[in-house]
Image 1 (cartoon, rainbow, N blue to C red):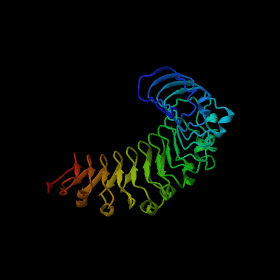
Image 2 (cartoon, helix red, strand yellow):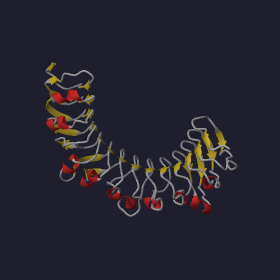
Image 3 (tube, rainbow, N blue to C red):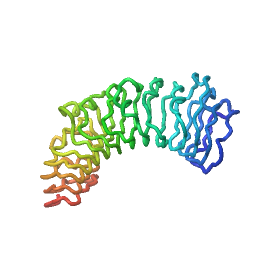
Image 4 (cartoon, one colour):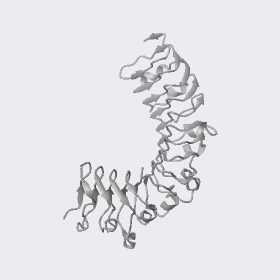
Length: 319
């Protein structure tokens, strides 16, 4: 009896394939095809179905979930880049065993209210990229599953930092890139105990709120601040930092020597800023360094396996 069906990344067309009689089906992968039409209502109540990936098709219509689906075993549902109509989130909120939900780039005509996910008590991964989100639901801490570990909200037209993150003590990854958030990064963000990856590319952040002590002592390993409005001195980076990228900002002053104490740091990207002064010799300990388009001077640190990108800096000599 067929339990796993993988047809992703083909050139399949037509209406949704008939799978109703595959009663033992556990995994259905149809992503990156050209299926069209509506999802059969019986599909989401199949007794053994735990994972379904329908990303990148031409599916339309609404989503209907029978009342019997309250006992659904579906844990992984991916519907990104389709063309559903009507309110699809309320039916999905009945799938209370979901752990991974991808609803990115659905082109909905209405803002997504995160309160509709409050019933998903086991949800660990949520991707709402490319959808408008309700500002009210982003500012509340009452309507989001506390189990979330990965949250992706890129291209969501967000203008204020979402305070809903404040109570997500299990959050390890947050992507808020390509939004309109301005002002300072709140101090409480770096206090989240499991947060390891922060992507804030292409917003309008201009600094860090409060003391940088919480940032230094945070668990953040990957911090990406490219294309923002940061200025002034570079902040003290987390002791745990492995990748730090801040291209296209207005950081200035010298590159602080405290960066030499970040023993885990392997990638440093500071191109297109206003740094001046000498290049710390410890940069030879890193794997990749990009300091292009600054006003640095002096010698390039001796290196062997290090990839150096120093274009448009003023370098007096080469070791």
